[in-house]
Image 1 (cartoon, rainbow, N blue to C red):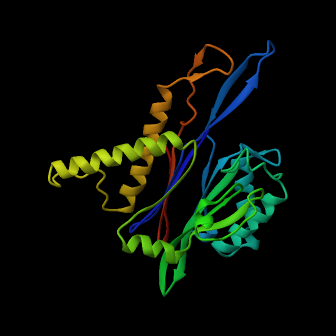
Image 2: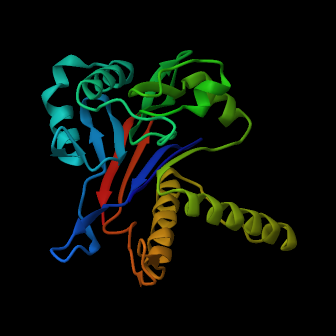
Length: 271
């Protein structure tokens, strides 16, 4: 499984991803086991656009590991894109030729997706923007009355620059998360509520998180993934059809982070 995060604040764009992929294998005796591969580059820079892109969902595209396929796509098609919009559309079209249409009733949120984030010129200012290229339904676009074909991969412009400006002017942070996110969402929803209450009880003497830079934002995203990786490390999953449980570190391995400001990529790090 996967956990990828993209956050946009007044300081810039921070992206983070784990590096674990879980595979199910059938043993000669018929038993099913889970194997975990770490070191997968789910988050990569797009140097030409000074942007970042991460992948969640399917572990392979056209028979090639998703991270390797993505790296090759970025390099091989560099002469065919010159903006985030053209890159998103190019990626959409390429994937439509490789990924079969999905059963939306079975996979309403899709089977594969990409976070694409960077800066564009908007009203005379460099402003963050975010595309979510994926199959499945898009609640964001549905709420705006925009119709798409969810059986196919679509280049959804979830956070156009004008929408980002609205959020930031209200003092909000734009957060997008995908992969094995349900436990993450509920855990950090509770944690943030607790921390807000704690700040109120201490009359603002202790604020968590307290971010003063893009570096702080990125390290907080790393902390979130590290927290979920440890929760999974101490958890277990019930084996299908059996009264047995197995440990399943579905989120883990090295964590990659990427920071983007209005001047471009600040740093890209895996540790």
